[in-house]
Amino acid sequence: MTKAKHHVLVLTDDKPGHVSQSLGIGHALDSSIEAQHHHISISVRFKSLRFLMRYLVNTLPHKLLIPTLPVFYRINGDYKNYHNPIIISSGGNTLYASIVLKSLTGGLNLYSGSPKQFNPSMIDLIYTVVPIPNLANNVVLDLPPVNIEKIMPRSSANIYTLLIGGNGAGYQYSKKDWAILVTAIKEIAFSHNIKWLITTSRRSGVFIEELLDQLNEPSVIEELTLYGRKPEKVMSRYLQEAEVIFCTEDSLTMVSEAIYSGKKVYTLHPKVYQPDQNDANALEKYDSSGFIERHPIESIGDVSVNKKKLIQVLPNINKQIYAPVLKKLRSIPSK
Image (cartoon, rainbow, N blue to C red; front, side, top):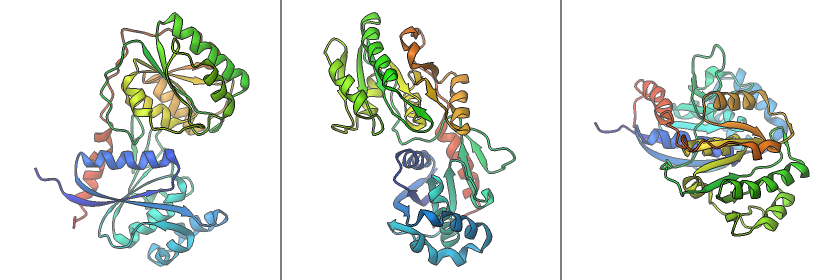
């Protein structure tokens, strides 16, 4: 059967987690429709006017708001010349643009995340991993959409991967937390007879990178990528080559990408952590579903790796994403 052709407008606010979710939805659609993707980078000009933007879009006819798009946003990309496109976005700053563009183009808008104070009826499909009560257009996914190619569940024997985040999203890592982690890295290498692939991220900071640099010896670490010194895109390769994955849980995007590898994933949290309710519910869901095993950093040395169950069978998230879109598209003519 020939796939229908559709223009897909991917709105991004340049925040990595939001960009990953938007692109993840786009990748999922590629498996069911013939899509021509158009990436449009947007940023709010005046953060102080976000309240006004929400008020206007919740109360006025949206066609009246079309001229305000370049007023409220810096926009890099063509957004005017499309008929009935699929509009994808994630992150609250994109919602005003998504809703107004739907009015301008007659398209279908898909959003990943909580609609916050925007009227959810103005969004065609809202993707979340935690259900939003009494919302008919809420599509509840087992895992969030992420911008990662399918990783074949192969691995290198006796290689563990560690993904390290940093302060933020309610997580506060002390020097003691980092010191415990680095000590455990060495102990696990010898007790499990493995070597590590380790990468830090933009939030990790100088202290943990210096500790890792001091630990960087061939008997412990196979490869070390310090983001603060030399950013490199090693995530996909590290996930593919790992037999087991450890990951700090301050970044849900990072945790999700680890889960998508199909490997056994152990998440780590510091002594001081208080994620918001949505993140906490998502982590609980992943844990109860068996996608992750959660541990405090101080007990990482006690983690017992189950060598008999290193590969997980994941649900078909792509189908969960595109199936409700196909139902919606039946009522919208494609160009």
